[in-house]
Image 1: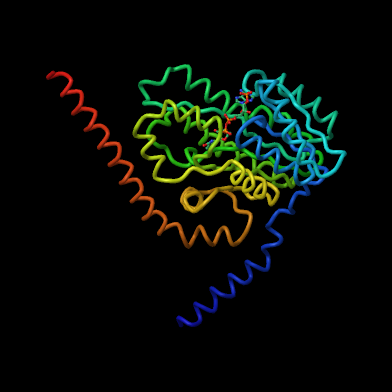
Image 2: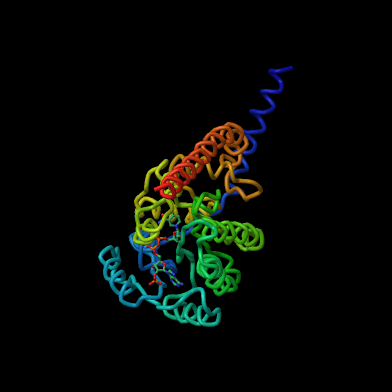
Length: 332
Ligand SMILES: NC(=O)c1ccc[n+]([C@@H]2O[C@H](COP(=O)([O-])OP(=O)(O)OC[C@H]3O[C@@H](n4cnc5c(N)ncnc54)[C@H](OP(=O)(O)O)[C@@H]3O)[C@@H](O)[C@H]2O)c1
């Protein structure tokens, strides 16, 4: 009986693998493709632009600071693989005015052709205790990190649907997979991207458009350095339980996953575990991915509980130390 059950499972898995090429998206060809990267003048976005350019793509960089854009353009152009390649710079705030974003993307498409891949990477972070964060920061972060991804995507989706092809990447964060001390303003904006991506993916899949959500870990970028200046001690100690990645490495993974049309894009073993743990009802793009989620979910939850326990004890320790030093100050 047991043998029969095992044979049935093996036959089922083999069958799944046989139909798997029918489920997996066709990889996007980057040579000659038009890739738009918001937040492309710095950090992860800049490295994504370089990675795509190295593979023969035409690039549109979007950010606010014109000087930074021009500097980055020069840097990227060193990696050209043919003399036809172009790097276009557009200075615009992606979070302010939809019409403006739509207009500049129209201009970019007139110059470099329809967008084949849009990478929504523009973003910013503020950390602090909930009660210490200015109320307008919650609004600003939601505007930049969430609406700043909605607007460019909304501006290119109709053309992608007409052409029945395309890739849309949302750069979320590991803080968009779990909420941590200090991230009450940032985390929700990155969780929101996941909801947007799931709903959008279901709408556009019949048009052969694939959505990728990337969950980078702490990554060495100008943005990360800025954020680190004001991180609460608890957030710093929790962050230090894993290492800081290089932006080039993160960019390579994101570009590879976007080309393949993978819904999830994560870096390293922590990233892999978090993506399995938070897979929920998210789409899969291969049988292997689905099987890994089914098999690993339980064991990863056990490991995750240990992590949560250690984070809680960091927070409790910091609180006790703070209270001790406050009462010592009072008695002096
Ligand atoms: N670094 C990390 O540890 C880490 C980890 C997880 C996720 N992420 C996410 O990855 C993305 C990139 O992060 P990063 O660390 O590489 O950041 P970064 O070095 O600070 O770069 C941010 C980029 O976004 C642009 N930008 C910011 N606000 C904008 C706006 N309103 N309109 C248009 N462009 C805007 C910036 O240019 P201008 O200022 O000139 O506009 C810059 O090009 C962000 O979404 C971030 O949340 C980062």
